[in-house]
Image 1 (cartoon, protein in one colour):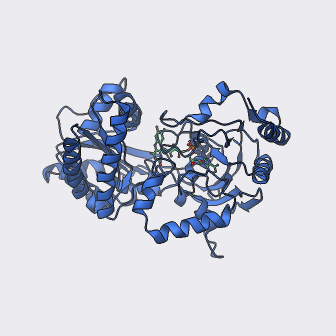
Image 2 (cartoon, rainbow, N blue to C red):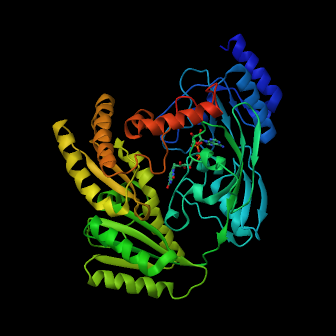
Image 3 (tube, rainbow, N blue to C red):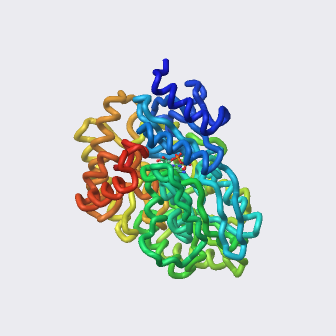
Length: 476
Ligand SMILES: Cc1cc2nc3c(=O)[nH]c(=O)nc-3n(C[C@H](O)[C@H](O)[C@H](O)COP(=O)(O)OP(=O)(O)OC[C@H]3O[C@@H](n4cnc5c(N)ncnc54)[C@H](O)[C@@H]3O)c2cc1C
């Protein structure tokens, strides 16, 4: 039953966006109030779906006047619970998915201007339509939005060559917490006119305002590509191979994705139509990709490098392919890990970043520390270590036994998180490489950021959002 105040709020929102922009039935709200992992569940009186920036601004003005907290949501594929409301029933979700227009493509300026609710795969397609390339690519690209990618500073599989979302955006349009619209939609590579406001919104996870539009950078289309799967006896050897390929192939090296054998086994078991690319059984695997605007002996180059790597004992085996079907099959293995983990049971997750030179030492020490911690707690854990090795980003996860109670899973998760993240701090790394803080890592942030960094971030938050209506309970 809605009370008078909630009723009044819904009526004001209805006047702002019309009936097509409101979702009020609890059953219809379910897809918005639970996250992709099914881990967080919230409750809202209403989901508001504005069709454009003007409607978004009207919604925010109403929420500002009524002190109603807003949870902005794009494709709802985030991994940290950032887009899920709390269970109070006092927050509203603003979903950007109706804001899905490609606003402009400028092939000469190499820019694409989009609404924030445009699905990432559609932005990639719009670039392809003018023989250009938008490089952000990740497993959720069929459902995540450009706004969500910006708000989480998403990474994905091409960061090694093109950088993450912060590197791929030139301008933003944002509805501020008081309902004013900041038009920063500039397609400029150079703009030294003061503080970089755009960068503040990237990675802000909906806590500073609602991103409604963006100018994205485009690149030349890589029309030639060659892909290899290699197996290696240790992570150290893979890191050395990465360093060799970077120096020998330069910018042609576009992906270097690592999967431990345990991660691969999990995919082979839980994801249909997958098979191991090689017959041996090494401890680590990597998916390597070179690309270029034209085929200037890419395959030969990779073949030579891998053959030398084999002679030097860096890798045990390698298969190379340029066939589209085989390339897709290899990527399916790498991209299948998220899904395989969901099916496998309780997984303690980490999304850590480390200096690349420290990856192998970190993994070795973390393995010992996790084993000691789980043994002391009377359980076991299987390390599922995979990630974007070329960016120093490990998803250093731990699969728990299947028969644990949820209380035990919770307890072990806190324990293992502490062990892994304390070690990350020792190596001067980060506890969130690409998934953001959301509600998942909010408490931990205070432990791993310095008091000064926390103070500066809180001051920025207060300056933008003094009423604290933008995604409260997330990030800070
Ligand atoms: C299968 C799978 C694979 C993934 N792989 C990767 C990967 O390789 N690399 C990676 O970085 N991430 C990965 N992710 C997680 C990634 O963060 C999201 O997929 C994506 O970037 C989030 O976009 P979204 O539109 O779904 O945002 P949501 O989940 O809806 O929201 C995420 C956060 O952004 C905020 N937000 C959303 N839209 C806006 C907006 N317009 N303005 C302000 N704030 C907003 C929300 O409040 C929330 O805090 C993966 C997720 C899945 C499910």
